Image 1: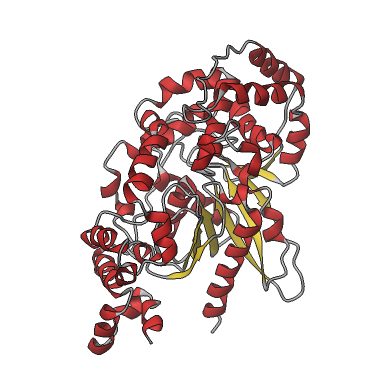
Image 2: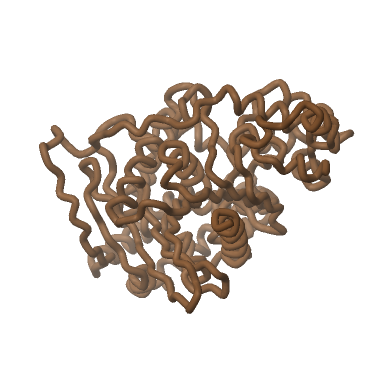
Length: 473
């Protein structure tokens, strides 16, 4: 009975009679559940959709809504320019025994750059990129790029549209290994996958005006799905993609059948959560923490304050003066590679900072890593991608409408052990009113679909199966 009560969604919780509510308060997760419920009762139910114009100049009276095929191309001149710039790189020797604790170790960087210059085949990788169909369409004045992969449907399978949204410093390419696991399955469900590039990233045009944040991206992606003919669909995201898909669920919950996240964003500033932090390490059952929550959360200051301070220097730069730092990155391919690939080292596993090679090739191939770098390099998109931080953080992020609005669509949360911050399920209820699935993933970090495509695909499928089975009852 207690377990049953702890898993109630908030709509049901609000209708409990007094005796059952008292029982819930006394249960292992009761205190956290009730505190989250009180926060849920006070939050808005949706956020306004609004409208925007991000093209150059004034908004015209009409907009071309045509969807065009797009093919990624390269040229001899592009490769020659890259090689010329690489050949002119000036390296600085690293400090002795510094490994990756000072950033990207330049001894290993020389090895990566040598591979890039002499073995990496960009023309071949462009063909890999083009293996899936690419498209562009103009929305709110800017060209929005996306890939659209239709499934191999077996008899009896239900085809469900799924939008997957990347973050920084990633791209749509992060999903290339998970796409075939979702578009061809042995499940009752199979997916039609749409992966857009956030405006300002990769092949999507950058906004020409100030103020483009996750709310604007969410609205544009809703318009994209509507233009593709989808009235209901699933969304999935991590990093900025988690914020954008959250916003999509908050804007038009009637369109979002389910939300799956591999980076869990919850409110962490309530009195209840502060108390749970104090109590949770010693009496975790009283605040709904599991043993795994305790392992991932504590020691709290080290894992949630000091480690984040060590890893967030880039954020302060990009949230204040992105164009200044971006000038050097946009001009130097080696500088760009070091800046981006350092994140794929430490955000995959913070322990990689103590390795001479940053552990980069433990989870990724250099071809895949450099392909992602090349998407930024050839599109000159590093500066607009960095501006996204300033646009989202130039005001108090905690008071934004989406931060005080809960999510009511069915939600699946995949908690990867090496993600930068861990959110216990007991805290997730402060934002998500209908958590259908919360999985403690056995391995993996920030770039989940890129690192562990099999695990990620399995979790998405089991979550969607739960949602679909309940909706058909």
